[in-house]
Length: 345
Image (cartoon, rainbow, N blue to C red; front, side, top):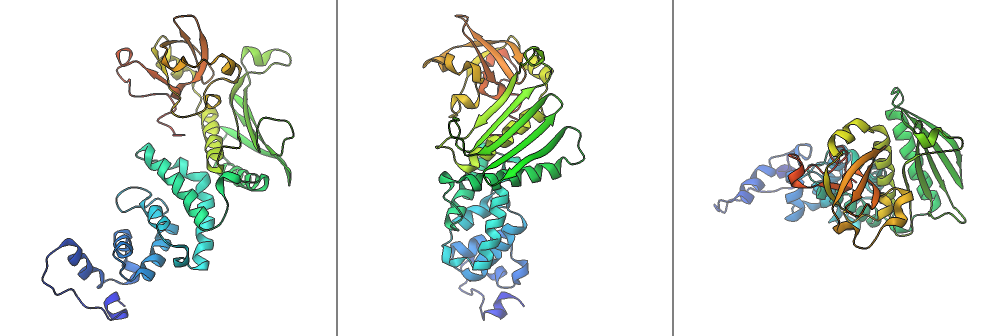
């Protein structure tokens, strides 16, 4: 049954020609099943059969969470604008489940623009807060453990028949979660716990190389990448760093890095990130206040880190997507790093 018959509606016969009037007259000849994202977006904005529109918008989101009227993710933005009392209790539970899953997977979606990905991340947080799931910035050990455990299960399913990596759940207890991942070039340890003296809040990720000179020495190791959460970090940011580290290990191709960056001059950019997110852990003490103003040249590659040196002989190891080559050095200067086209942090 169409909306016109279900709700005893009439066509707009004012004779006023406009896109909105024409849309309305087409709308009431549709069934609820036929409503699309453009329809529900306009219905909510114009307050037309709002209850019907809200229910349909939630159904559309559950079916395709990245859909949008104009841009990817607009549908979630529409849901964020709703009042909590407009969302039925059963629908709210379905949304909670979907949003928790999206916390782990949204970064893998092929966003056309970086700002859309960041906007979507913030909307996930806003919607979770609206639904009363958690205060994102004050996550507990158990919330982090459950989130990382779900991340592990998704990765294990994704790579169950893929020799590129092997995931193992070593320990899964209330106060301790340990995951180990073997890649072709490195070994990863992920620990979630409540440390008494460690510098992290709840999660620590470390990737060490198998075959570097340091790794082959007795008792030696070569750090490829690490991160840990801190009190200022939000749960989504921690999972985003987890995905970032995983992708770095999975897509590591040293020869491409060498071809792209060796002998290229450029500058280091933080892009709003803390230095420990992109500078080698052993080089953090070298950082000076005016460092980002210096021009560097890439002298070598140490796993996924670029070995950079300035005119004063000052050396620093930095991730490739934080090193921007000077325009005069490269015909593809807009490409900021090998990994920047694979994923965004």
